[in-house]
Image (cartoon, rainbow, N blue to C red; front, side, top):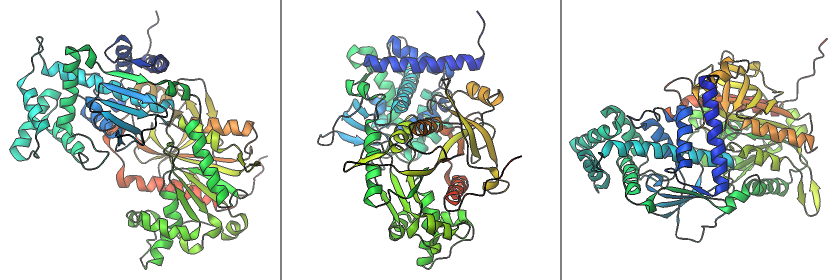
Length: 569
């Protein structure tokens, strides 16, 4: 038998994980300690996602990966032995506590101390994300159990000390805290400093707000205790269930359809349905801030920095005030109620005035007055959800027995991505989207050029790999995409799905073939470099420049006429 390369073995393991996950969803349940669960864990260890660091090392607990997961899973997930994934359960009038993770817009409910329910509204990518996190937590829990128990099942003294630390009612400080962290470091196989850093990182949000975590001591204790209970009683085995409503929803656009209907109704209610519309997929602050930020500062007698990025830093704490100011000049927003978790902003440029724009923004106000474009800003989608929402958004709308076809002029996508040749903060312009795990590839006629951006800023141009999920990335596979004939410059999760929906809308005649498409990504991580993965933390202020540079370019493309076509001989 021909021996496979590292990248081939990793790709096979990723495909195995996805195939197993799809089969288990149809089956309706599985136990991580059973054969199916062990197969999932085996495949996850084989492709060893960069985000989970040392997960495959049985000697040590992966703390950075644990921080990442705890920030994206609901509080108490570490002690649950019954996890349900469903589609449309109505928990609004129940006593179940609604919990939203700190860094993932994910809807879940605490049914009991050891049971939690996820309401899946964003498609298969969300399911894969949850399953990889659950598998990771189970792998780490097994490591903890192996460290604290001997062959006879008796626990060590450090475990008893950890229990005391986890159940203390008072805040541990000084020597008492140092001793507790030292005991914990022995259990997790990490140095005192590594354990302390993880403790302090999780403590930032521990019990601070609704979407907090339970703190490192409690998390590690609950993970180990859960495995101890599983070894004593088959009734306590962790089980994941997929409800029939979830199985029926897959492949349908239930939440996206309702979301798109609400968006189109809002456009019609404001009388904007006959105007040219520019769709921008981005965050909920950058377009608004550079469109109205300078005007807000001037009206309030404050100095407007000549540097756009410095101005942005000056207004970061005035979001509500800018919303109120912008409402007088064509701005409106509405919070998503469809449970798609995608908020929307609309900017009616016909009501804007030159006073509002920052001086660095190039704008043809005569063109703006004549064309009166509408900017529809939608929040980030999540993986395959991007196809669902665009597929619904780009089709005509039925209102009062009439069909309303919107005039979509351009579609701009600003994404957060991993870079392959560069560093955090770099910008990538897509020439194509390569769908990982499939033969689907989409060429992009990208209406962006290096000359549109700040001179000298690091920009990479080439294909982008649309991956299955943040937790399903492997260094060898990504290295192959970068160094082979693909020459990929980055990886992301939505671009290929957006382009798939755009192509479908063109084929169906919903939008013109002349629609301008723009894809620009800023690098939030580099999965090929240790210390630069997503688990290393957010970008912070260093993300301002690339985010607002891309936003400025998008805006200038919208508020200025197209350059004259040049005939090539």
